[in-house]
Image (cartoon, rainbow, N blue to C red):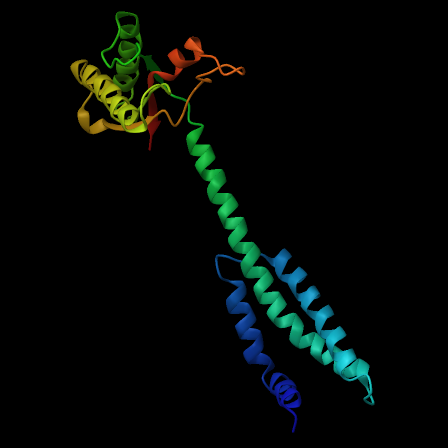
Length: 219
């Protein structure tokens, strides 16, 4: 008996086993029905074509082609569903990250160039943040320090950290518990405005907006 004939008979004799296999795979988290059906259609088409060509001199090339198509549809169904499902999960994860990044800060404290002490004109911002946190005892925040693009990456990461810690200490002085605050530094990685103009010249106004600590509420 030919290997193909054996495989085909095995499928006919164990339809319940095949059904259980397909259902189990379809229940996996990384699964897409749309792509599974597309993959099955492509696999079936290829199988029909291969079967018809391989048995074109036989008594029933159409029947053999349909059998090949059935076998081709099975892996196409599984591979298509899993591959697209993983891609959809990745897109969803990116969307979640983007949504988290769009949380509005409850305050932004700006700094002078290469400084991390809080300027007098920024004291009201710190006061306002402290008042909001005292009014909502369940609110926790992350203090994200940022810099402009002047200086090395390592230096700016350290400077961003000093700026976030500076705001943390100012809030502690106003009665906000340290356990409600986390600090982070992004250095020059997250500019709020361009550091240079389109012609490559310096953009002092943009750099001033990048020297900041953002106070973001977190869960």
